Image (cartoon, rainbow over the protein chains, first blue to last red):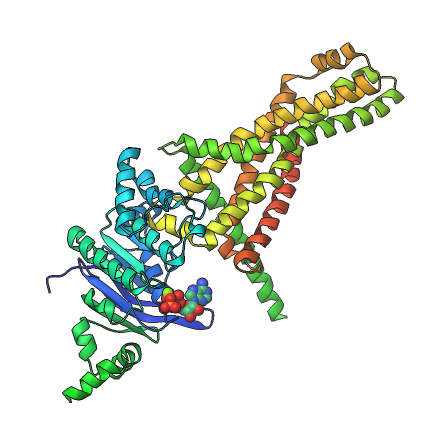
Amino acid sequence: MSEKAVVQLIDVKKSYGPQQVLKGVNLSIMEGKTTVIVGGSGQGKSQIIKHILGLVRPDSGKVLVYGKDISRAGKRELRAIRAGFGVLFQNAALFDSMTVYDNVALPLRERTRLPEAEIKKIVDRNLALMDITGSDDKYPAQISGGMRKRVGLARALVLEPRIIFFDEPTTGLDVAKSNEIYRVFFRTQTQLKYTAVIVSHDVPKIFKLADYVALLHNGLIHSCITPEEFQLSDDPVIREFVETTMGQLYSSEMEGEL
Amino acid sequence: MIRFFEKLGADVLYQVNQIGRMGIFLFYSVVSMLMPPYKVFPVVKQIYHIGARSVFVILFTGVFTGMVLGLQGYNTLSKFGAEGLLGTAVALSLIRELGPVMAALMVTGRAGSAICAEIGIMRISEQIDALECMAIDPHKYVVAPKFIAGIVSLPLLTALFNVIGILGGYAVGVGLLGINEGAYFSSMYNDVEFGDIYMGFVKSLCFGVLIIWICSSKGYYVHLTKGGGFGAEGVSSVTTNAVVMSSVCILLFDYFLTSVLL
Ligand SMILES: Nc1ncnc2c1ncn2[C@@H]1O[C@H](COP(=O)(O)OP(=O)(O)OP(=O)(O)O)[C@@H](O)[C@H]1O
Ligand SMILES: [Mg+2]
């Protein structure tokens, strides 16, 4: 394979008290590809993202980002690595005492030396991309949950990241809005060629976007394969996931083939 | 028995850990405060929150502290027939002790608690994590402006407290109790030395750092704090804790600084 892994989790284990959340996760994220992490609620998907971001330290095992062990990186090194990140937290984590506009402008103001007029142009474009207009002066508490998600996305994309981590980007959005978000992903990814790690419950729609699907099951990455392989796999765990999340439609297709 | 030692050991470890954490916090904050780029607006905003908005409280408590000093001082001094020294007594107690300490306690109650709660909420709602993931240093962005504002505001507020306190003492001593007006100020001119002012200034600077340090680091590490509950409850208990600890530390440090500076 000529592909390069930008992020590698090697035998990552993490426990909270008696609960072992990650039991030896192995996962490689390929450069320029979209990896979608799926799995039941509370399985530890967000925890995997937090490990990669360097916010949580594994009990054992390694998390390599661009070949560097992120849990041992110094403050400066960490900042250099994170400079290429675009992150959407599951709860969006907007700065709640700043307006929508300032939230999206913040990375530009703190990390670049662009003049305010230029910043305004970029922010407006990103907000329009996410279909949020006319709410510039509102505070996060004054907008809807779905809007918060989209502001978070606009903020994550504003610095043209090399690698994005989106934790449930479309949860809480209506179908039309989430389709629109997927189109935006598709467009920005062909434009920016970023690597993407997306946690989603929006199966099977998210598969259209995915190059790889990683299924987290019982604290382990059960498989990391292409969506086609995933949907046609006859592995019992994957079959069960496919049947419960996608319903009878797909399973009856399978039966028809048999 | 073994349980007891286990618990004791865990508690000691936790405390040592906490002290180490706060030390590292101070180090990072000071370093990021000194590193460029320097942004003016956030600092001005914090000076407004910590300094300007404390002015009323400082004026109010200052004038009453001065007045009570005038009353008490007059009563004591008149026993020795030394009412003329009232100006000196009021000014020295304010400049050397009460000004820095009272102003610091007032700022702790007003701004320290606010800082702790603000940073604590940013922590529990993952805003600090979000900053880190954007490669923005939370020490530089959130904490450093507060430190600068504390260092700038506290001496100024203390000076304000002293001035208004001396005027309060004047109002009681001269206005109410009929001391000679000239005597009140001239004794002050003669007896207050630069060393006294210097002492008060150093104290107020140290208290400024102390308040911001304790209050912001307590909020910053709210997620690692044991036994205070989670979420809103965690923030509330850590804020109470920060205010108590910073008030106690102000009085402790006041003693040490006095013994060093005298
Ligand atoms: N700080 C923590 N302390 C204790 N347990 C935790 C902590 N953080 C996460 N967990 C546990 O780790 C498990 C995985 O959590 P995580 O948020 O990663 O789930 P998830 O797969 O993202 O679920 P969802 O799809 O609902 O977002 C949960 O069972 C949770 O209880
Ligand atoms: Mg999650």
